[in-house]
Image 1 (spheres, rainbow, N blue to C red):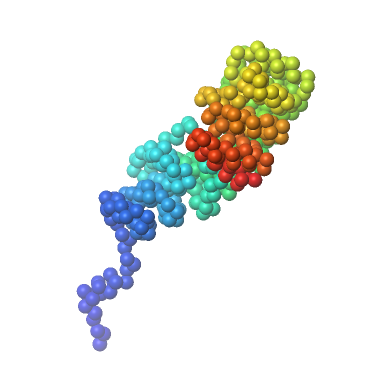
Image 2 (cartoon, rainbow, N blue to C red; image 1 turned 90 degrees about the vertical axis):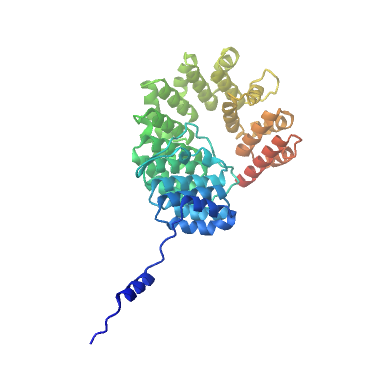
Length: 425
């Protein structure tokens, strides 16, 4: 005769056989646990298995606030959560570890939830990049890269693209190229901006198909990328845009990209724009002629330098003449004009970009060492960044000396530049 097992015993055995349920503390309890600081991270990581979404979100917030290297693995785990807000906050948390303060302005800071969907705001400003000497764990880039190409929602993918650019995530370039296929304008724009930051010229030919994109912002970003990445197979399309632009912005962008890729065949085109009523078109024309460096254009460039009263062509002509070997430091000289403009909050980024490029020429690089000693605070700080980007081994002693400047801010920038240069060399 079969022996019957009491029902209460069956329940007890069944309960014992079930896996332990994931801990589900309330968000306030998560915050209480986090007060233990770094020691709380292992316990917080367990809560990422909670079935309660608000608990998991609070865990990511607390991990981000705590920071530290031990927070990275749990944040990577959080990036695999299927919920879009979890993914968005995990991205911001990972970036925040390498760029402290990012979480206060990243996309997750503005997230609005509507049921299972989220919406975040993306600021137009997107120029942040970590220092060259900062090393990001490959697993971090891999996790964010997966979200760029396959995150839950377009805002997650756009946020991941932005993060890859900030973290210089070269290994995630294939994910950025995949993100361009989403046809979502925000994702595409963020992916193109990140590709520009990575600076991998192999990506240039892969984005030329976007030169005629119908979205103005995406088209302008693609045009700028093609120019900076020297994708010369895009020149025919750029010339076609200049010949028949759908607005002034694409025309400026396209002529600027042509100017970035000096081709003697474009010299007549650039010469025609020297008399344009648009000061930015004149500036692009002067830039391009300066890079082509034909002696026959010297007189025209000098005329722009002496007679033009608009800042863009003035700076462009100073750049062109500097490239041509005019390295006089006299007060009325074009080289000095570029250096002086480093003191201008409105125009220092333009002058700095010109000097970064010009400093790749040995004569210009050598000429920048002296101003590094005698310049104003702003000049020294900007020159330190320029030399970090374009300096060589001969620059190391100059930056080493700057790192001991009597001005604390200058000394700090000098040390950062020295570390970045050494990591690049």
